[in-house]
Length: 221
Picture 1 (spheres, rainbow, N blue to C red):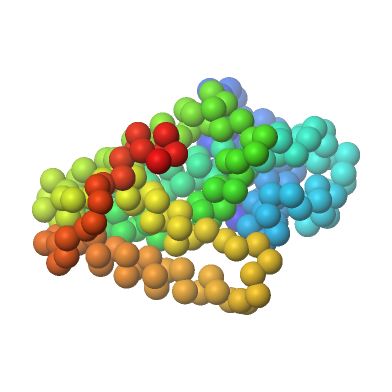
Picture 2: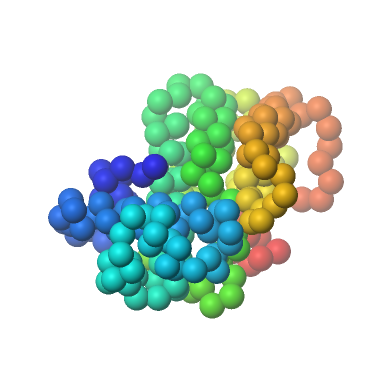
């Protein structure tokens, strides 16, 4: 679960403002955490009253912080993106081996449930909101740094791009709301490790098609 300090750090990254009061931030963080969990389990259309119940707050508190579903979804996307970027920066700092840093980030991003963002970025959600664009750029720069370091060190195959890492991470961690396979999440890190082994240099196969770039992802190609 996101701590109050982590929530404040992410909010400061985005706004540059001072930290909110601890009690107000704690309630807001509980709502965002509950929404993130329930979006993963049931999809982004889960009743907001149920989100409030899981968060342990009243409906009035939820609506005081988030007047509608779009506002709550916006905050969940921002929070997950910010936390995932923090994991990338932590990996770069903590791991002197470039491939170990990339591997650490991939597994940490799975724990942040980054794949849960995919269904939230459709429909009426404003994916071009300036706050979201700024956080996305921050994430992209952090992951680009990890990929470039590993590739420069000769540890990462050279026929891939940053987009390949993000697409695979999204696909391998994307939840399936209502899935009739309890406990399927226990395979996530196993399958991510298989993916990471396929990224190691020297490459043992020739990849079809072309590398997925960040520009490809932005264009939805």
